[in-house]
Length: 217
Length: 236
Image (cartoon, rainbow over all chains, first blue to last red; front, side, top):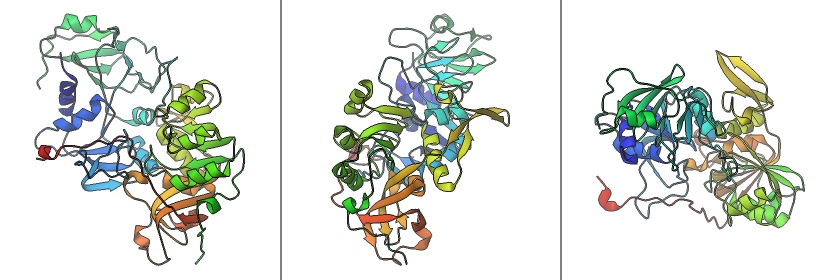
């Protein structure tokens, strides 16, 4: 079973040289720590920066330089700042090549729910609806089941949707799955995790085609 | 040269009345019009509709106008950082319209650009799309979204000149240039107010034509919401 850091590490393997990448809050943020050797990518944060760097050294925090999680950050050499409309032009216009975000539920048709739980305080969707509506390459980083142990990979989402038919790939603590043809396709297993365990944790339709390899980290 | 300079924040909010719709720039607490918010509080106008990406925190930013119950409705993309906000929303004192962030930005931009409405894919198939016209373009569904209308836009810039040309700093730019375009009266507050001719025309982010009033702000707190740092020994 993967840790959150290992989920991030596995997702980082999906990055290709020259990619512009938008990382969501939570596990997706960790992906920046595992960029493969020899690959150059730039991180976009939707509040208006391309070329986001690591957190600043203590004492060098700048209130005018934050990411979409409102954390203080730095700008890499070659970074650019822009307004929110330009930022979402990059996203909706599919100039950003990869989007990684968390989810509360994903359905086998690619629907995603990650912004609202009825009866609980509604904080808002932020940029998530714009991101999932347009990105070609959306990877969901999440645990396979919720805290109660219920599957987050469902036949149909039960929570209010963030977007429809948009998730292409999911990396969980148990597996790598592709979402297509109205099913979850098991591509890789986490080290030491069997197909039965993944099947048991997946409420939606799971396709297992032949021997499923263990993922390499 | 047309001078837009007003003496201070209180002069800048002149004409603000009950029931008006305001735009306020900023993302979180980054790039918010701190001085204008204080002046709006002092002005006391009530039943305001505020268009702003976030709603501040309990004791800063738009939280200050929630304390005084001046806000009737918030139009935002994310409002999670504010207990007072939650209380007022749950008790029905405060109405909230949640808008996807890119749509929020574009509804501001469109308002200033003379575009009454536009289609966007964001929100299709979700509750955001309820009651909205759907059209398919290039095989994909889109929903119709309308430009905002705002009586005032309050923006915060780093530098500005007497005629209202503005330059923003870092990620404090965010919604500010878009809202500057959209207000019937746009009020810019700046950290540095310089004479005309001082700023390089190549570097202007918001041309002065969009700005009706400008003043030099004072006592900027620039509060940091999430102070995240790395240790020096981690430096590679």
